[in-house]
Image (tube, rainbow, N blue to C red):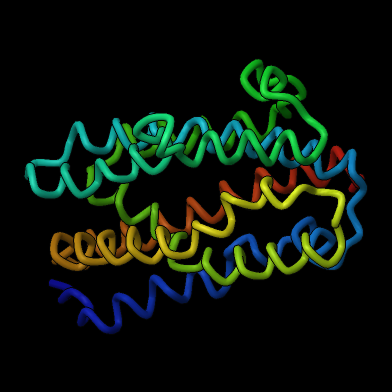
Length: 232
């Protein structure tokens, strides 16, 4: 019988997935961060990425429905509040992304109607929601660990927008400014759960595979956007 990996080795294997496959390395992000995108291309990206943002609460609700412990559900519920907000004085990530859409030349109606949503983006996002809905809850948690790698990308993106896209209103960058702190907090909780519940080698393999799959889905979204905006 194969023994589970020691926790340090398991965590290292998870981090290795991001080091190899996180979408910060995608050529569309490279173009964005080097200042080579046009206003029209940024608009396409912002509108398509909104479909992912609006789908995150559905993913998290599906995951929480399977979580056995109230304490874990209460902690995970904060993700819903972070995305949906709690009221006029506490807007969430969805509202902040809509402001980015507007700052990039799109409209809220376009975003909510999924106008211009690329089939590849829709397929990838829907596949993620279905994956979390259908897999064991802790494997769904493992798929969220792309948040381990997002703070560096957010910091780089803010700098890129300020340097290369000054026409994008500063208010449109609000989502990125607050994301690193939330991502660190969320990933700490997710790691805690994955290490506590993936106690067999089989579950560890599933968790690593889930993170690998999530990286593929993020990459696939950008593949679709790149092909539409730039070409193959």
